[in-house]
Length: 532
Image (cartoon, rainbow, N blue to C red; front, side, top):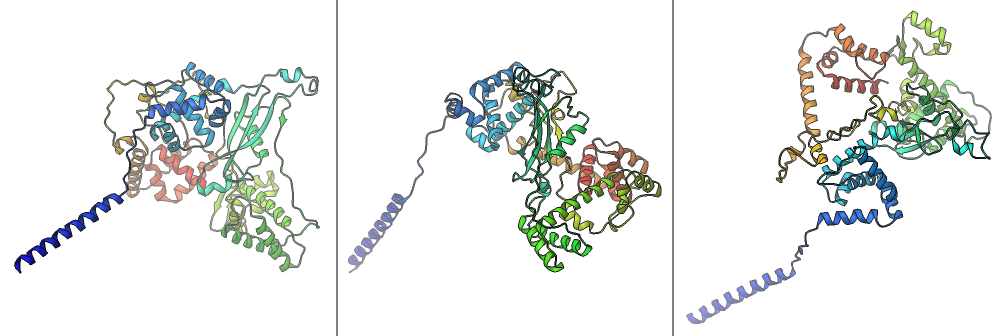
């Protein structure tokens, strides 16, 4: 009996082991293994991609980098000849320029470029900045001012000569996509859709650029940009007749009917409804949606029993925009103050008499409460183009003040919103180094040693110093006035407004004096953007 129990126990144990083994084998068979692929030869893949772009035909090359191979190699030759771009032991000139053209030609991010060329993101970013600086230094060789002679295209044509013998070129504007902070996107939204900047350029008959003005908000009209170009220190000089290709706006959508006489209750209702429409998101740009204008016109017409159309609302908004612009111009003048509680432009008697004598139409806005000022700011004020971001092409070029090209490729810098390059960028551009190159992987902190984190740390230090200085004694008014008025890049009346604010706010004044020059300039820019 005992033997039978022992045999049964042994058989049960063997059966259990076999069952568990079968389950394990079935699980192993059902598993999906990732088959190890052979290692990618990055150099081979990169050379194949570059060769595919440059040697597969003009159409393929033009589609990828927006120029034919002949023009591409000529650009590389010019950059090398003028010692603006140098070949390194890690990257040839052709690859550097190819990455740059591919990026700007399709608005591609650095991550995409780095993956396509099998490079790191830092490498793609660094060489993009190097080529960008080199292209900007070609300013003197690309932009040519026209002379007073008649162009051969006109002189040798029986159709145009002598009728257009004084024509020296053409001027036109175009919209270029712009990435701007969300709080000012309304100014940059125009009829083209999306956020754009309106760029003005002039060319001669040999297709050479003679002038360029960029940075104006996309909602600005071409005529405003032209007036700004003509009034700048390095203004656009028109010595002869120039063919203008400026798009003029047309008044469309006007319904038939007589002129409407606006009353104060109608204006109050208009502002009230437009503020509500803006809060509901029916003002995506500096203009209201057509259905919003139709809705406002319909309700005003029903309430006041008048024939009312959307064109009446549109025309009234044009008048309000002119009134708002006039108010802001008066506020910026020297001698005028602003009471934000009462919404009054303040001034003394002498300034008042001088302003009224020069501009009698400004009387309703001086020392009197401006009705519905806050509503006007929401309806027409916050999204108006100011041209504060506009710059001429010569203002971007480092060769305007210094005629001798500075081929400082070893330490490339570019004024803009981008971060500065890492300080080891010159080692990669030169291809040599006094020390042996380490093959050890750099840590994340080492990569960002001189990047945005170090800059953030420096800013935090400045803020800490400013906070500590808040507990010190009163501000020296004379010293504060000297520091504020010596700030560069701002108008005198704007700096005077900032000085008055700092004197009234003692804590802000002490904090301002504790900052360095860079932090003071950043504070002034934020203050002017918020105030004006």
